[in-house]
Picture (tube, one colour):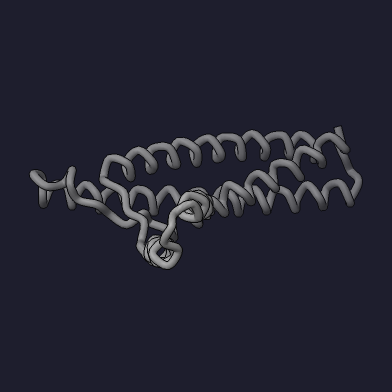
Amino acid sequence: MKKNLIINQIEDNQPNQSHSSSKTLNMNTQEKTKDINELHFEHQLWTRELKFYKDELAIFNKRLAEVESMYTDKEILARSKGFQNQLTLQNNLADGLLLDLIGHEQFLADTAKESVVSINRRVFSDHPELRDRMDNFVRKYRELRNEYMRYLSSVM
C-alpha cells in the first residue's frame, strides 16, 4: 500500500494521468516475487524469531507455575490457567509455522538441486499465506505478552 501511495504521488506529477493509472493497476494485480536468497534469509529470520518466542513462552509458563504456588484465590488461579492455555496455543502455532518453514526450505533446496545453473535467476512467489500467518502470529503474540505482563504485575 505504501508503494502504491508513493508511486501515485510520483505519478501525480507526470503529465499523462491515464498512463499512470494503468501502471498502478498493473502493480496491484502482479504477484510479488523474491529470489531464493531473499526467501532463505527471510526463513532464517522467521525461524529465529519463532524459537525466541517459544523460549519466552516457556519462561512465561514457569512464572505462571510460581504464581499458582503462591496463591489459593480461585479467580487468580482461573486467570493463570487461562494464560497457560493461551501460551500453549501460541506454542502450538509457533510449532506449525516452524514446520511449514522447514517444508518451504526443503522445497527451495529441492528446486535448487534440480536447476543448479539457473537457480539464482529464478524468482519464487513471496509466499503471502505464510507471511500473513507469521504477521498474525507476531501480532497476537505481542497482544498476549502485553496482557500477560499486566496480569503478572497485578498479582506480584
